[in-house]
Length: 85
Image (cartoon, rainbow, N blue to C red; front, side):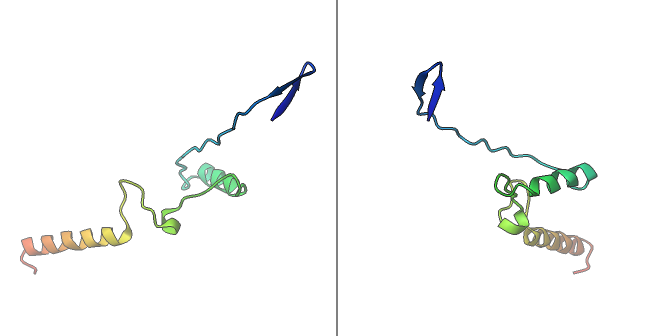
């Protein structure tokens, strides 16, 4: 890159790094829905990571299959404790 400053040519070899910001938006509110709608208009600059689409489950969460497996195990244990199985 070349910059002209006071008739002096300056050459720089600096690269500009993009910053990535991770945010959580509550889309159950009107304001959150508006923010998401506005961000979706900028497809080149904004990337949405939806676990339902990407298959990547965030830390601390579980998939639907894992949830139903644990729920079934808990139900079986409760039924066994009360003599229903």
